[in-house]
Length: 245
Image (cartoon, rainbow, N blue to C red; front, side, top):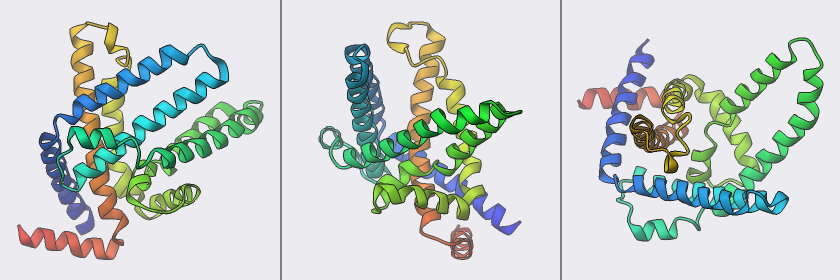
């Protein structure tokens, strides 16, 4: 019970720190819009080109994802991101994101083409497949933070992700499930905002961008705290935080 109360205190403290970082870097919200525009242009340009088009679009997604992770890293380190940071951001994690995405795509492709089809022939196979996808989402949930906060090889990050979830399942997943549900509600059906001038849709999209940025900062701070401590040392740190207030 003591650990629960202290973790709640840390959740609140992390939320405050995340909000401060967000307001300090509010201009980074425009970079998210730039990513959407870049990906929309990439999709429109190469969407009809079979295999090559898919590869080009995957590279564009990896570039934008790596760029955003670099900016988030700067934000959780207390820095104010600038246009120069944005210009440089596409380089540091581009290769790591590509490799992680490739390994993930390869595993999911094999699963979809082989295992999922076999399960589909069994009673309750659809339910089993859904459970498997949920487990994958849970076990690989910390991958973004592992990419920019650790230095292991890309293939090793998958094992690191499993280990992290094993050691920090409730502490990590409780806030992420809540944030994930909110993001899904706000962003669902609003990714075509460029040509959608419905006021409610635009408002929901704006809120989803703000929440997404907040969540990525929050995850980065929370991951660093959990990854650099055991439950015993964490309890001590949280108690010290309580005494200092």
